Each structure stands twice: as structure tokens, then as C-alpha cells.
Length: 231
Length: 148
Image (cartoon, rainbow over all chains, first blue to last red; front, top):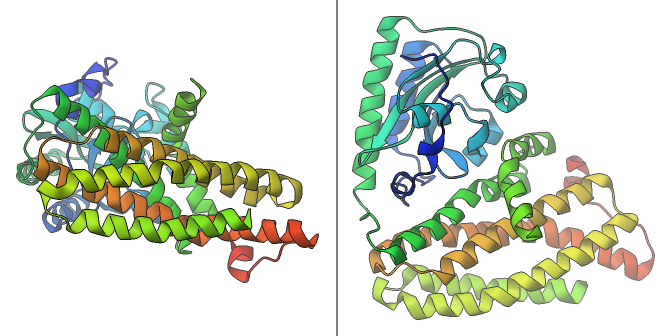
């Protein structure tokens, strides 16, 4: 279990890693098995939030979650660059953060926006690639005892196995055309959280404040679009 | 602006029908339907971008900062989703089953976009268009008041 934040994040953008994501993984349809695992992770550790977080190209996508506020339950995502899960993926090893607010090496956005303090994450692997983090989060500083860490690691292994099973439903891209098509689809899948939020707001299920806070956590998506349009 | 909103609403109906056809088509028959979707969608999305420009101008004159901010948010969403969906349609996957599987994401995204525009964006455009025509202050529903 490491407490060091990796500084080299290049692993996040390797094409072979990003090709591991497909429709069955970035699906908002709840998966009973993953949902059971995050529920148990929260119960075992006493941390109120537990996630199967898939760290994609621009966002982290919550494939299963317990304990998130309503707007993040709606969007199921935040920008990748503000996530703590990106460090689990980049370092390809477990990470424990006792107090995110006191570590200047960590992005401050989610600490400021949602009060995240303690974090423990284990890598999630699919087809030999580290695709995300099975993590628990608390809004107060804290650490886990070895027994809880051990159980969390087991749960992460089970979550990886379930993701692997889901991913097997779709053959991986093999040619250049297929890889290009997968990237194009990924851009739609990563835009989905913006639409989910707009839709919940339009239905009156989110307040303007919740809507704006969650959009703030996805500001990178919109900024990137503005940069592209300006070129 | 009113005429443009009405025309876009009609196009929504046609697009929804086409999306339904794409969803129920066998994998091997998808290609021509996706080409048709691409042809219809491109001018539709461009027309929508123009509507936003017009609506922003109208709301800058007589709207509230919240309405302007909402319009800005939905305009950005449109831009992000348009770029991504057109990218998908421009580079269809040669593997028919995988294409069909991924299409579910795209159809879901487009339906969500159309629904939200009808609930939030079009009413906003219609209200300011009518207000501009009559010189009256725009009427806000209780639902919309609650959002401000």
C-alpha cells in the first residue's frame, strides 16, 4: 500500500489502455454484482463512499457507487484530471491518502467541492490493463486497519473479475479503422455525463446549485470543447 | 426565432423516428441508416447552433443572468455532444455487432439531448421570442421561477 503520489501520468493515455473501454464497461445500467461489492466495501471500512471508478480519457466514470451526492449520482463522473483514482491507475498500485486536504501534490478541486479527505483505492484490471480504481472515500481524515485493507483488496479483485466478464461481451479493436471508431465512440460515451446532468435538471430532480456544482466538476470537458472550437 | 423553434421541433420528431429505426435494424442493415442519420443530423445541429446565437442575443437584452448562464450551459452541451456524435457517424466501426452495441450509447445521448432541449431550451427561446414580438416582459412559469 503506497502513500506516494506518482508524478508520471503517461500510463493514463496509452492507446492500448484506452482501447480496453467499451460499451459494456461505460454503461450506466446498474450492475447488481458491482453494486453489491461497493456496498460491502463501504460497510467493511466504515467509509461512506465506495466506487468502481473507471479512469477513461477525459473523465472518471462511476460504474458503481454508494454514498455519492445526488448530482454525482446523476452525472456518474468527474473530470479525470481532478480525480484521485487517476493516481492508482497511473501508478498501477494501491494508494492510501489519510488527508487529501494536507497534501499539496493532490488536485484540490474535489477536496474543495465535495470535502473529500481520506481515500483508499486498489487498481481494477481488465484485459491486462489498469482501467480504474476500486476505492473508498471519507469526508474526514482517516486510515484503514490491515484487516479492512485486506478485505478491500479482495473486493477489488472480485470487481476486476466482474468487469472482465462484462468486457468479454465485446471484441477488442484490431485494425486502425476499428481503433479510430472506438476513439470516436469514446468521445460520445465521455460526453454522456453532461447530458445526464442536463436531463436530471430538466426533470426538476436537481437544484440549480447541484447542477452547477456537478458541472464544475466536469469543467474540463467543456473547456476542451472551447479550445477545440477556437482552433 | 419562433419559426425556427417550431421547425426544429418537427425535425426532432423525424430524428426520433430514425433513431428508433437504427435501434431495431439488424446489424448488417445499419450502415445506410447511419448514413441517413448523418445527413439529417448535420444541418439540424448547425441550425440549433444558430438558434443559440439568436437566443443569447435576446436574453442578453431582456433576460436574467441565470437564464443566460443556463443557455450557456446547454449551448456547451450541444457543442460537446454534436462534435462527438458526428465523429462517431464519420468513423463507423467496421464490426457490425460492435457498431450496434455502441450505437446504444449514441442513441441514448441524442434522445437525452432532444428531450432536454424541449424541456428547457425551446421554452426559453419561445418566451423571449414572444416577448420581443409584443414588447411585453417575458412570462415565467412557476417551475422556471423555482430554478432561479
